[in-house]
Length: 429
Image (cartoon, rainbow, N blue to C red; front, side, top):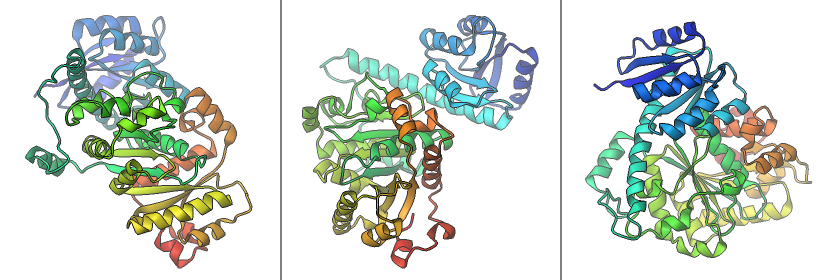
């Protein structure tokens, strides 16, 4: 068995020794070297060619962030995991922007380290393979693509069936609102980050608001191809081909962004939507989908393929009216059982009590997101999700609670149901 080669980088010799000792009994790993600062680490990477580097963030001369940035440029095949005594989100952001694959907080446990090392090593191997394939595709230009595994939408291949037996298909959560401005994009984006970071899951975030999608803007993603470019690819879509169009955010979420121009939405057909979501379900644990505020063909297909539909509402009459209409349409399509109502800005008193809202919609509010316009607006302007920029804010705690429910699949507790009627209880999350 080929072992994962590790390089330990820390300016304290005892810490390096402790980490080596903690990993001593991991049969699939071997420590090939140590370094006392970032500059020495870069030299050792060239010499020893490790698979994974455990890099301390605070070191004299060349610190861990600087060394990680240079390592990603010089040795893209090496996965760097930052280790630090700092747990603040600002340090996490710097590490991920520098190119680190994960972030561990001291004191370290052998189980946590080993699990993280195996995860980033596996991701890096897959990433390297996909990158080589993408280079081949892009280098071919408009010519013929090299042979690759395809996934027809109709009857699955035997390979697909075998894969399904090994790993369950990913969970699809679709966010919908019949009225713009309800905040579904903010909720979808922050939920994706929470699931990726809290659950250590592979998460894809898809912007199916094809004409006016804002996910790329909210996450400050100014480069990269988008879903309309993917839809214009020749032939059947494949996992390898689609990976060339996903943009990795520093939070660990992979984003398939909306077209840059509204007119490009016409390139994305319902058949493309079905293929894209099927392939993502095979590769990711969770797929979070943001949709347009309309029941067009693409949105309807996304709703059909969803495991959960999150109907986002606020406590104003026009939004409630649109939500009631949306629920009737979903009921006629037999989607009602997978609908969960998410009340955004729940602490804003707009004249409609939550109990009255539930009575009018004949469905319980499954989750409430508090309002924090200052934190939310600041996060959007910075291009950083609020759960990262303001982790201690109540709005961030709301997102984490929603993430925990999605990850656990649990329903509303008895305490949370208190005061709700029978119809409300039936449709609780």
